[in-house]
Length: 200
Image (tube, rainbow, N blue to C red; front, side, top):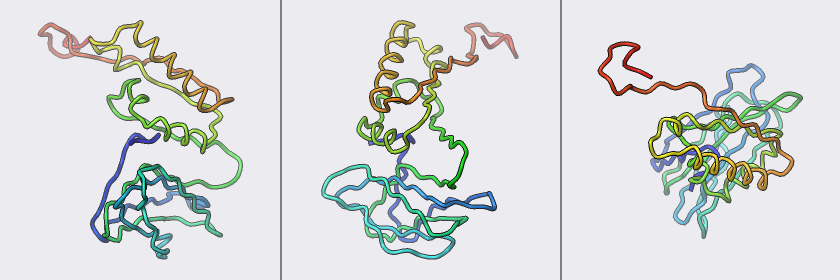
């Protein structure tokens, strides 16, 4: 199961930590965590600016995506997830925010991805992730890797892209969808040229 971020970070060893630190003086006021609850899941705790919180389990009777939101009473600069060593903990995504006017931009992308990435995400998690964020705009930027793939046809890509735009519009009604065309890309030419002549 993969959510919007497209990755799963798994750990089991007691004391293992992953740390998110704000580089801005004002820090953050809201912290979001996406976990995979599952049978046999382990537990963890949050450390906010070094202060340890209570034990939090990731065990559940079924495997499911669970978003957690932490809004502390004051701003902080750093949050860490520390594993307690009683089973695997799988992280699907996390982020921090500061309240007030402005634009929040979240980038999701994997090197080498094609439009198939959107099919590989768990569709329930994709729907929940979009609903939880309530985005004003979704930007889709695919096409470069499809353009250099001998297995992809123009017609097949057009069909896939159209279907995925319709899916996103169903999952996030009222959200704008911007499609970015594929930028230039280079691949090795069939000849034996040197330098620039080896590419097309």
